[in-house]
Image (cartoon, rainbow, N blue to C red; front, side):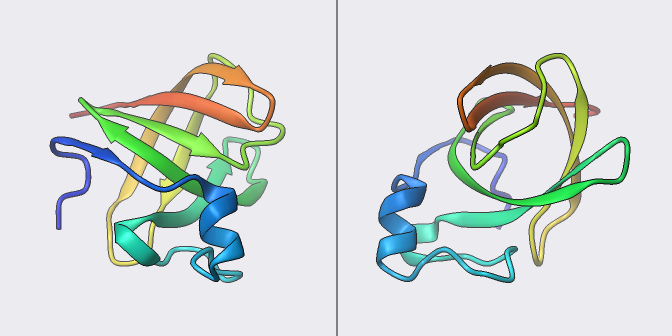
Length: 102
């Protein structure tokens, strides 16, 4: 599945976590095709996140504490490619990013 193509609304991360869809290990597909994975920052730090919206070469990331606007990060999702992202906005624990190198 090429999850970067098209537009997809995914259930909010907190709803998936309550339903058992957010994996502790990360990198899994939960109910309704929701995605969890890991963000790796340039300094090597990593954290588990949820991808709540995919559209037009961009992603909405939930659980993005510590991610900063303007930074480049890597997104790892089990069974998928490593995706280089440029963070465009951050509000609380949510961030929006565009896919680089497409």
